[in-house]
Image (tube, rainbow over all chains, first blue to last red):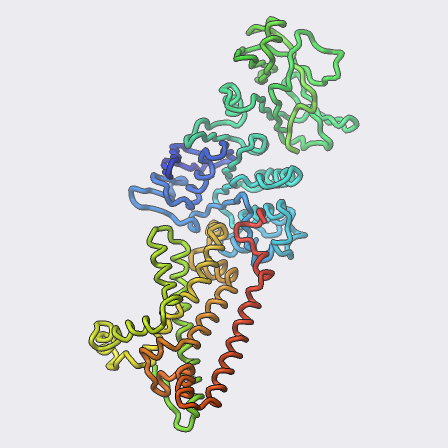
Length: 356
Length: 240
């Protein structure tokens, strides 16, 4: 498996990005951070668009940057693709010519043009001028253009941030298909955890110019939750058990138990469904709530009890899966909750967020 | 670079040919020098930028005779540039066709550099970075992205450079003199006719220059009508 080795600093006036990290190039690695944290600068260094970087950068044995030996491989020679936040399509070229721009400059192309067009659903747009496209269409063209150049690594810099929800979901679905069909490693920068949670296998968190976490996406989200660095949430990846079209519900398997989520169409059973549940959307009962409209109730054990000012963050383990629950200190006292206690957690089907 | 005088050509026709040849060669040299200079200025961030910009713009405000005076001194065999030229070519630089071309290049430089610099600044780096990430080299990017998008500015720059060179008088008079077939251009021919009270001939030259300049400028403005360029949003399309 290819590996991207980073060891560099970038110093601007009052900003310092310092990275010493190895990223295995497989699947999608999400790069999360607040604006100004340095996540876009990281992509620019990898792309070769940031001239201020000092240190080393290599993919396997290919050295792309080494300040000590004054090695700097120009962006056009790195064979790395980049999809920008704004699509940056060439306004003087048609959609088709934009798509061919990178492909023409790639000497050993193996990808089939029509296959990529199919994948990105661009066939009806080929003859159009890029100025006629909507924001979502522009980003799909930009993605296809980058794919057709057949990079060894694709960088995506907040590709969905300028789009409305409907277009976000379309492009997310396209990205997911790309992930499944092409064996192309990607680094995906975003300030939206929801987006990253849907796509990424691993997550790298940058804060104030340093890598603070790097690992499996669900684990990192849970670390961020327990560190109070993000809104408390549970990140799940579960297999589909059954679909109930008459109720618009899908049940997901969690060990012996199940979770219902709202879903209009039957999800693909072959792959796992990723979802997020906000800790504030889950409540606790001491007895199984059989006569309740709330469809999801799971049996579990309190494994962690973290009391802060007015609320308590509970970690509840249900069928070996950690769930995070926030309740008021008042409720915690009233129910006299303690570590090791067996309880039920409950949440509505609609509380389970999944971008699809 | 001698213009061969043809004995039975009308002197004013000869002046027209000299003028067109001077303006044509000047425009070609201006585009070759002006394009990299404008690019350099558009991308430059150092403080020296203001000084170079002022230097390039100097001919806009300076009386042409001032420029002509200093060039005359430099071109004469007493000064190093004139000496080097004489040693290299065996001919005197002052009062030659080459002298008026060099003078015109300096005199018309801002008319070529300014529109190009503005176009390059507007174009920005976004599309060029995108092209680089798709494997295009710097030359490739210039010919496939920069040139097609800023085409109108290139035509404007060349036309303004050409028109301004046709219209120059002071510099040519100072460093070129009035040698038929060599340095006698239309504006100088006109001056001659007026001095000799030959107003009929002066009218012919004047009105032709007015009409041809008007036509050329109209074409430039037509080309730069806002509707032509406003669709091109250089910063990436989503913002627009």
